Each structure stands twice: as C-alpha cells, then as structure tokens.
Length: 80
Image (cartoon, rainbow, N blue to C red; front, top):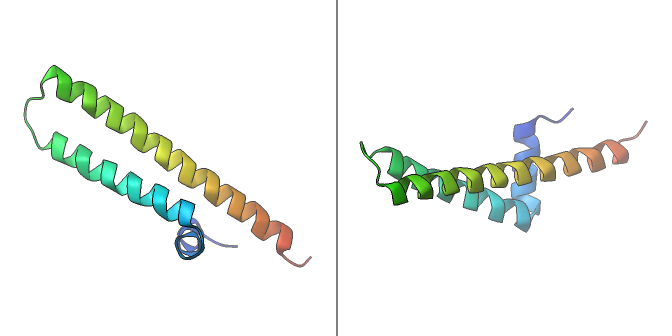
C-alpha cells in the first residue's frame, strides 16, 4: 500500500496539475508566515490573511483530491 508521501512524490513527477497546486499552496504558506510575523495586523491585512487561509485550504483540498484519484486508479490497476 502506498503512503501519502509516496503518492505525493509520484504525482510531483507525473502531474503538472499537482505540482502547480502544490507550488501555489507553498507560496500561500510563505505569505501567511510573513503576515503572522507581524504583531498587529491592519483590518486589510486581517482580511488578506483570512483570504490566504481559505485559498491555502482549497489548494490542500485539491492536492488531497488528486491523491485520492491517484490511489483509486492505483487500486484498480493492481493485480488481484
């Protein structure tokens, strides 16, 4: 049985979509880290932070979906 990290590594090699989504997720993570370093956020920065968090979660959900699809195809292709 493939682990999530094994599937993610395989998808990094074979799926442009997965790589693109993962890179966007990482970029959003860096932006959030930068915002969280500030002690006080303006209302606009708070709103931006919430938007970034939602966008990052959507990217994480998309990566999980791609991994589920890959796992499903892998199980169907496995000899019985």
